[in-house]
Image 1: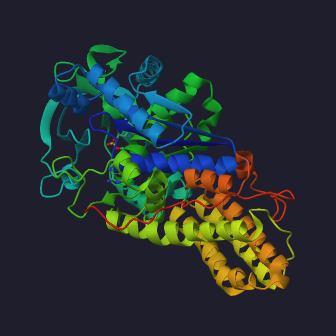
Image 2: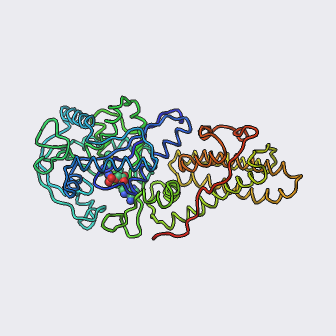
Length: 509
Ligand code: MSP
């Protein structure tokens, strides 16, 4: 439904590490969705930001020898600067240390406490600082956290608990009744399985004697709030702060599979307790795996987005991430695969097509566009792009970005075949065929214009450059519904070709 507004969120990134591939992927998807739906007339609001409290950050700051807030300021700034460099757009950037967020968390805690959903008790449990959560014995693999592969720390202390279990049945019923609340379905089934076992209550405090870097509980100054209880509320606190709470029921959360439990169990039960409706949809991505296993500083295999941009250009990096991962599944990150995509799909299929068309335009017509005179082959080319648009739209609605790109590249393959089959370079030798050559090139310029528009959410820089090479003003890029044949005024001139994507021959591996 193009008319319903859309609220898209990324996870809030921990400020213990600099922006890497995992953070980049989630933020990229938010950017793609926003650009895509805006181009189709839908109003979109996107939120991203940083998660700044808790053990993990306190430890990172201590290691850096600075106060937690100083450390958080630095790394949070780094995230913002990186997204800016990557040209990832968002409407608001939230930090969990922002005073409005702190006040909101305290307000919700007060409300839930007053209504009897928070109690005091003693607890003994196994805690993983990497995940910032307690683990049940049966969730561990060989006694270790399945994600961080380290044995959790045993912690015994008195704490406050949220009556999460009281909402278990309601949540189970909601998820059973609404098959698209969590997508892809495999993750929904994983959550349903968890909900068929007792989920227990959620420990939502940390004694200041052990950890002081957090939001103080409004009803007991000896404690700070558990970092997940604090961070999850950002999705609502930001809207409340901006006076856009009306958007809340349209929320689509983009998250990685490692934080599924927090978003599919902690968060909805918190919302129920706070008297708020559930989010609209939880969209769960798989992980980028590295050949050497998990991406980590110690293995020295951390992929930094700005390095990738410097080496291959932002759009080639975007294209690879979107084309080589099926939404929801894991994929292996490899620069060799990135370069293969860059050379085959971007430099060859798209780049060569654009250069050939623009070069012929120059050579035969000094760039001046000639009249159309459609024959069957031309109509088939138009149909291929109409199909691409329809198919692409359907796939993006299902978050199948790789299929969306595949659909557009099928049309580009068609356009490349069309060049071979209509052979304007051969026809050009016969002066009598000049009008046909001009018409063929005009058809191809239309194909390139539509390509720029359809590709814009995925490859924004390429779309801008292609539009400029076609000699069109930037505003034309937004006119998605402009009919084929009506984009170029008579006497229009296209620019001389420039390579869109230089081929890359050497892969630093
Ligand atoms: N701060 C929490 C989220 C709180 S949301 C209220 C957190 N932060 S994180 O910085 O560790 O991770 C942020 C996101 O990056 C998660 O969605 C995680 O899945 C994603 N990724 C981290 N490494 C990843 C890959 N290698 N591949 C894809 N995404 C992964 O968790």
